[in-house]
Each structure stands twice: as structure tokens, then as C-alpha cells.
Length: 520
Image (cartoon, rainbow, N blue to C red; front, side, top):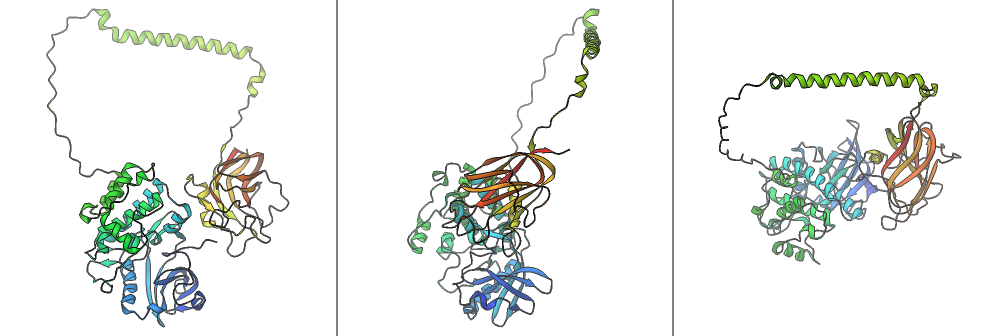
């Protein structure tokens, strides 16, 4: 199944010198209990934990023990907490505390239900221009806040960008950030940052400022659109050489639907010379939105010519001078006559009509029904209730670019006694359901649709008759429900179809729309 990510890549228990089980259950500084590891990187492990003093869930970033003897790395690790704690911006992962206990160095952060942008790119290959633009704009807001505080991130990359389940975008890992008033924590001759996203001045050891972050963000957005970074090579040296001496290919040559303003902004952000890039995150943002700043007003034109004098009109006759009120009066008279005639005709029509006319009934047309709540349904699952329940609302938000998804499974028909998972739509009121429209995966999944009176329990579907079935779904499908009446619709997935993630099986549902008529 998918794991929550907090400022790191997917879980890799082979990295570092400490296995996950060795720290599980440990309490650091008498306060922060480590419950389960949710990520690991080159410097640290990230744990989901509990703050026993405040009683809240937290993320705890623990430096790998084999690095704790390196004073420079420990200083850099602590510097991340100090740097990030100075920032209070919704687009930056919040830091609560630092901790040093028994040879363990840790940073305590807010716990986020999120995936990384790296994962999203790996899963989808490319991301649509609108989503790329939204992600870029939110990151520019966060970087602007950091830059105003005198802090340069210097390691902006997809694995440090978190896409929260509630729609927020946050940047994490200020571990190699450099403040204006601090010295660089790096050994002589070494580079700080991830090679694929370093600005040219970082590669050459020149002074680094905020423009290096804008260069890296341009690389990230370029990769979102095209599925690749603009500079590639067999070795790190080859990538660096290409970045120093070549100009990237315009993304419009690789993807025709990239808007010109987006392509132009990215190409400028990727200029080799920092002086040719945007001078600030605000300028980058303005270019993405094509906002004109301080546009001068046009110069005043010549004054309009004065009207030529006209001769006094000659006296008008009575008919011409009174035309202003005679014509309206005549029109009013005609309207009054028309109303009288219409009234006489209506009275005659009523007197000759049949009594059946008074019993005419208006039948309401079927239409999309309002949804009160959305939730996942996993009655045969183990562990936490529901299946990616925090994502369920995405299937009724009116946006096909967001989705609820199942967990990933080794086979299409789940495993053991588990026969399916699903989504539950609680309607605002009991209704007669004409159909349900489902927009989802294109990998040939199958399932059933149930209409119930009330939320489903663990055994609600056992022996129940589905109102509709779907087979081999490949995109949007409309399921006829035949007027079934109820207040709850359950989309029950029984076969996950062809594998959609390597050799594993999963289904995504972008939108579910119930169509019908509310009951009287």
C-alpha cells in the first residue's frame, strides 16, 4: 500500500546503518515516541511519532547514527531546524522542536498526510500544465517568504515538495539551506544539493543567492511538463557540463499544449547567467500570471474639437412640439385595448375548458444530486478503518484532476477473503436514482453499484442486490440504476483490472456523480 511521505522519498529500509525496528517504540528527550518509520533519505530517517506532552501526532526526523560523529553534518542537520523554525508560511513544513538524546539527533516537525511530487511524476509520467502552474505558484509563494527572511533553500527538487491530501503544497528539507548571516556548512571542494537540480553557479562554486532556487524550480516544473529534466547524461560530470554550456529545449517542442507564457517563464528561469533570470520569486510569479507591473498610463491625446455653433431652430408647429407626449399616449392606449381583449379571450377559454386541466402535474427532471459526505468502504480490510479515506472527498470535488484511489495489490481480485473496496456517497436526501456517472481508471476494472437507505455496515452488501454493474471499465461510464430509491450510493470495486503501477493493481476514481430526483 502507499505510505504517507513527510519530506522524503519512499521508505528504504536498506539506507542508513539503523534498521527501522531498532528505534520503534523509543522515546526521545522523554517526550517524542517513535511509532513507525515513514521515510528514509541519505541523511536521516523520518518517523511518525507522538508528542506525549501535547498529545499530538508529529513527524520526527532522526539523523542516521553513522553520521552523528561528523560534527559538520550534525551542525548542518541542526541548522535545518533553526532555518525552518524562522519561517512561518503555509507553504513550508513547520518545525516544532529539536532533540538530542543518547547519540540521536532529531528534528520534530508537523505530520502531513502527503505524497511527494517525485512520486506523482513517477506514477503519471507527466503532469498537465494547469496543475504544474498551480504547484509552481504555491512554491513561489513559499520561496518568496524564505528569501525575504534571508534564506536560500539550495536543494529544491521533487522529493522535497509535498502534495498534501487536503490540497496544500509544501516545501521541506532546509537541511542545506544557507542564511545570509551564516557560513556555508560544507567541506572544501564538495557540492551541496542534488546534482540534477543544481544551478550553474552551484556547480562552479560561485556565490549562490535566491536565483539558484528559481533555477531549480524551473527545472522541477520543466520535468513535470515533459517527464524529464532538460539536461541529461551518463555521468554527473556530463550533466554538469551540459548545464554549463547548452540551452534547454523549449518545452513546447516536447509538448504542444504548454501555454506560451508558461514556456517563456521556464526558459527565462533556466538561463545560465543568474543576471538573465528573474530577480525574485515575485517576478517569476508575475511572469507565470502575465501580470503587468507599473504599466505607465498612455499620454493624454489632443482635446476633442469643440462643436460647431448651430443656428437657432425655427419655431415648431403644435403637432411637432407635442409629439413627445402624443406618441406615448397612443401606445399606452393600444396596450390597454390589447389587455382587455386578452382578458375576454381567457375568460371564454376557462368557461369552455374541461375540468381535467386543473389536475395537470409537473414531473421533475433528473439532475445531479447534492452529496452530503464521501467516505471509503473497506469492511474486509485490516488496520485503520477505510481505504485512503482522507482522499475520498476528491471523488466529489468537481475536479477530474484529483482522485481517490485504492491501495495497491499484488493481484486484481484482492487477496484471501477480501472481495472488494469502495466509495460511499451520502446524499443530502433520499432520492430516486436514475443513474450514476463514474470517471476513473482506464485499466479495465469491474464492480457493482448499490443503493441503500443509510450508511453501509460491515455486512450491508452481503446478499444485497446491486442496482447496477460495471465491467471492463476504461474511462468514464454511466450506470443505469433503474429508479432505485435510497439515501446512499456505494460504488463497490470487485476487480482492479490490469496492473497500473509496475506489476501491481490499483484503481483511481476522479469523480462520482449520482443523477436522479429527490423524494417528496
